[in-house]
Image (tube, rainbow, N blue to C red; front, side, top):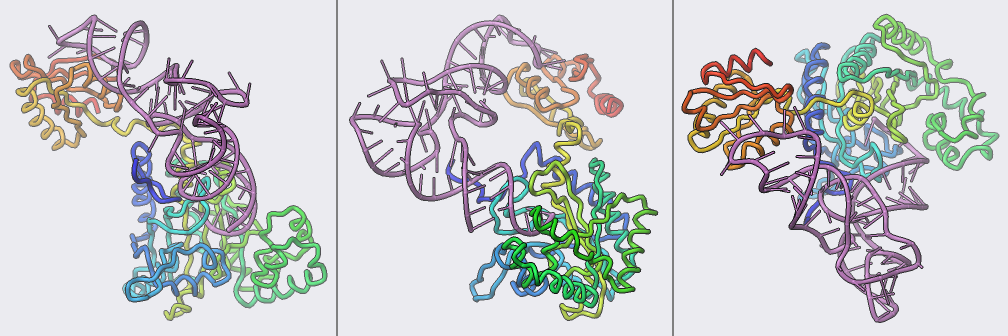
Length: 418
RNA sequence: GCGGGUGUAGCUCAGCUGGUUAGAGCACUGGAUUGUGAUUCCAGGGGUCGCGGGUUCGAGUCCCGUCAUCCGCCCCA
């Protein structure tokens, strides 16, 4: 074959594309339950939008962005995440002024990384963003919507990992103590952590190396350094989750990678995913809207990885039914039958019954084989005899039983069986 | 960005230290059944051995490069 999809990209093709579409259908049902409305933004934006909101020091900005110049020399970037675009669209469309302040989105994101299990260069996220409410109930709604969505998809046993990263004031004070406490023992830290200590001190808490983790055991927790209002908010989120029966676990070391997060940070992981185990995550970003030049507007949201959700589903959920389980296979034998079958298929579709028409030259054996392989629930057999008698032979592909039905009665017969 | 594994039929893979026409299972096509699938039996089609170069009398097999993929690190969805 001459061409293949670029590195780190994938087609969504049958049979997997059926589950892919189903996930979108579930999303379209679940998120509107929270008053969230669909939001779609361009897949590319001005590069500044991302560098300024995510933070120059983050991995995404420093080494993972698909940045290019257009023909007029403007620097554009394929979006690596959805929140920055959502905030931009929220402000540009003056949505807040119209009372639109909760949204959900589904679409591709792009990061230039080395592909591996659960990581591709183009991947899809489904996410929500809530604007304008500073109170903990928004955090709870966002987290509960993610939990409900996963549950509706068929994922079980997921636990939300929860933390608070405070606000600039209390986090700043905490980072200062962190630095002073570690200043004397930088030699004990891994190379990466020494680097982090200067660039992005909070991230050292996230270090996976056993030696570092042990060293950090004795450090004070960020959550015990929260200022009064942040502490109160954090408590409120926990109380809300408890009363909404969303299972969560406090994870004091959880630090989200992007600069814009304030207060609530959370993540959902799965043990079925290997090294890339994050299914979704999010948090509060109370300062981002203002930073973009909008009015002070608190906000909270999450993003989940579509491919990863489906990977876990595939490993844990029962085998999905055939994509054609509701369909009927209409097999015509001969030209006269073909005309009859075409008319019949129209009436079936009018009645909402999916119908695969086969008026080709193959033998009945071949047609039945295909019907069986595709998993159709029934095969309608129409040959010269049936045309003559104004009847259709309806064969149930599960039981093998077949029955001659009046042409006029076929639709009703199949409706009853469905 | 770093380290390692793999690439042979549509799919899953076998192919010993280099040696003649590269195999199996499943799938596909045809037949036993000229109108009956998911079980059986028989026959058949299908391969630039990822791609490019090198070593050799000879390369699927060895070497180099390249592309893709997988696993780990980093990070995240």
